[in-house]
Image 1 (cartoon, rainbow, N blue to C red):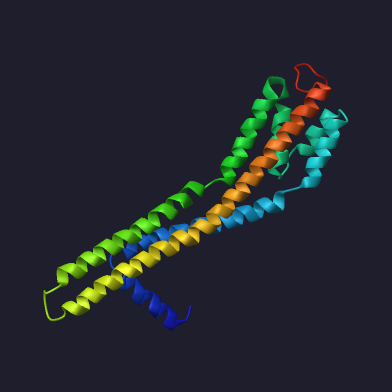
Image 2 (tube, rainbow, N blue to C red; image 1 turned 90 degrees about the vertical axis):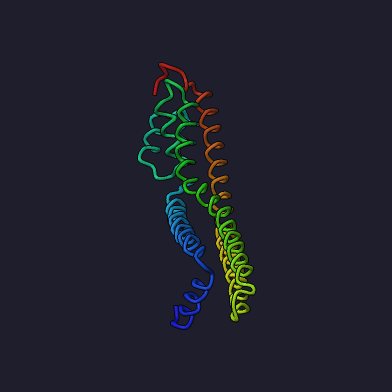
Length: 214
């Protein structure tokens, strides 16, 4: 950031009034959450392995449960991890095990989304609070001194800066939040589809029954 731009940002920050301090805290938190989620989804994308999922399906379809368990062991793909968890708990409740494993994967994928939703709601409210305090300062300064005009314009400027800052944070957080929600919905669909496929293939070969041969 150039010195001139830095000075402009600092000046706007001070002109925005005291409410800019909580807005700055919210902004910093939003940036940290965004960066963490971006890196998480990048690592997630690197772990996905459709070929490994297909290989597990082929092993189950051919009736080779041992091979399916072996191929799904120590997998990085969340779908394959869910399948492995279900196959290892087939004698108790395969469907329940699949649901538990899918829930764990979705919980990790949806981490901090509620925090982002809170930021989208909180930031404009903080900006509105800054608007109210700025306008209040303008009205209280009317007729108070010879510099009343400067104080009034300063209060209005404070109100506008705080409002713009709050809206900017909300807009900047809303777009990535919706993107992460879309990715989460896609993962949920993949997990549900894989779980249904495993249950169908397991039922065909009787793998979901106690005492079946591996």
